[in-house]
Image (cartoon, rainbow, N blue to C red; front, side, top):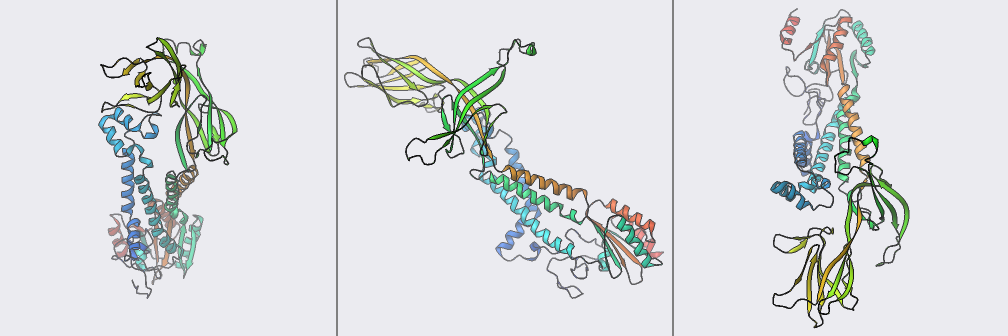
Length: 547
């Protein structure tokens, strides 16, 4: 696009970069000053695939569309609780169906139960980040170059097409200009002079507020996406039984935790402070609960296949609101389970002789393949169901690996060399045989149980938090920067008749800049310019022109 001054401007330029003449629109149309009339890359190139991708993501409509989709998806993610917030140990598929019926099942099947960690949600966040980055680059650099190289003397059409514009006939233009310059300096304007003309400008730095916003938002989105990468963000539950040492989730079995003892403390009902509060209540009033733990570090040079040797790092008490911190990890006391079944003891009787064949104890969390009786015979575990249930097909199975309702199928061999199967669980015991067969030689009976306490812990590691804090802080700085300090410019320019043209522009708060110009006019010979968006402007301007 070639201007009458001879300067060639890129396609999409609205104001000539050399003389400042508007290149688009008619003389009565107000000039679009959003990007100082500079051409943007998205308006200049549209040939290659890179250009098309750039133009697509630089569109504000595309960015807003992505935001709307993200907001809609995020809203759906709040209809039911995320998997992270369901009761620890619950199977997600079963929980959503039991709690919310077919809607919960559909919610789970569509993957909304783990929305914020899903690949497509992360892809939307990445698309939003790319859109913000490209849109910022596409607009920032043309605006920066235009403001940095802006001229003081502007084309008369540029002046006339500003929102605030007027012409004043003065007796002494030099004196008026000098007096106006002094008054503008008092109002903290930066003064630029060229050929006897003046450009007064202040708070240009506030113009970059939206782009500072974008930088903060991009850093924040990067922090959110980093949660998708292994080792950057961990939020896992772990259950540890008393006396058990288990690897800590998310540490690649580098750290281990031992539950040495679990304590539960209740409020003393006899305490005078609680009189009248606990009376008549059967519920337990828990004061606190804690885990006496030992933290271990696994040795790296452990022989392959051998049990890993552990070095004790510390012994700590993990209590409610008093987590254990180590190596960017934190372990919180979350839940507990009292008197979980630990072991079951069975008596075996030889029904043919009527004598006791022996007693054996099964570790419910780590059962052996077989157990030897006192008479030398062996009892094999044919099948074990930690939490017994019958599925929809009528087949026995286990709901999970927690021994809440254990059941066994024991296999023995009688004196005739025949295999015998016996099903046994709490309050249920029967032989698996044909009706016409003789009773089994061995009879099983439940002899006793052993229980222990289980502590529920939350393991957290968040290396993305600094990104979120920095990004959020930068975003707020940009928000304040762009919201409270408007970028203001006032042009004072002589015309051919030595009259003074005055024009003004601001990106916000027009009444404030008009007030400053009104005060300027009161102290000088300048007439107050008119706001060309006012309905009365045209009639008043014609009257002034006539006079």
